[in-house]
Image (cartoon, rainbow, N blue to C red; front, side, top):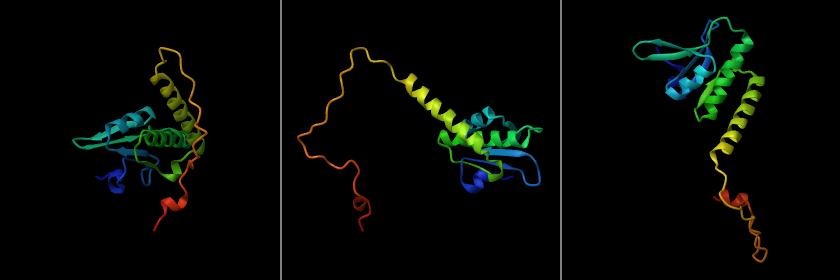
Length: 145
């Protein structure tokens, strides 16, 4: 038994099992397993070494797409190299997950910083006596041959 993520050299692959309606997700990292479970995938095993996830039977096509797309997007947001088969992509789910990830990052940044103890000094004004330097290096600086 081989897994697509091993064949393709990725962290996770989400796809429809050939000649079937089953949606499979395979990965090797325990943290990725947690994301898949949170997206509705059920852990399957063949002891001692094989672990994969599968969406439950009976989901509509749209529910399968939404779950598969959400899982792939959340895995990518956590830094995993994750792919989802084209026939399982839901554009609506992509937009929803992007917004969810953006909100999490904003709320995470707000809760991870503590308020300062004293008054905050105003930002320093730029020195207008020195010549201005370009904010972005010119393209020629990056492409010298």
